[in-house]
Image (cartoon, rainbow, N blue to C red; front, side, top):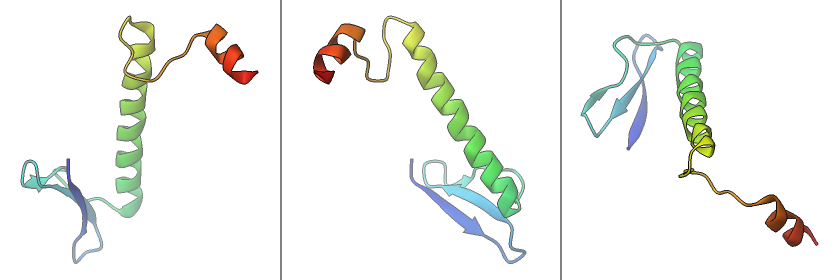
Length: 73
């Protein structure tokens, strides 16, 4: 999804999404607030991705222990 970081005249930040043609956050954020929101989103996405390792259809690359040892040789 194309996203654009936008700074307004008050030096506050938001993200504009061309998918929805709107800003993602209801309020404008300080840079530190933006940083926190974006990092939290990335962490949540990574957690969800890693949870798939506990299923029979992981969405990340996996390798058996034996194959890893063999490739290490």
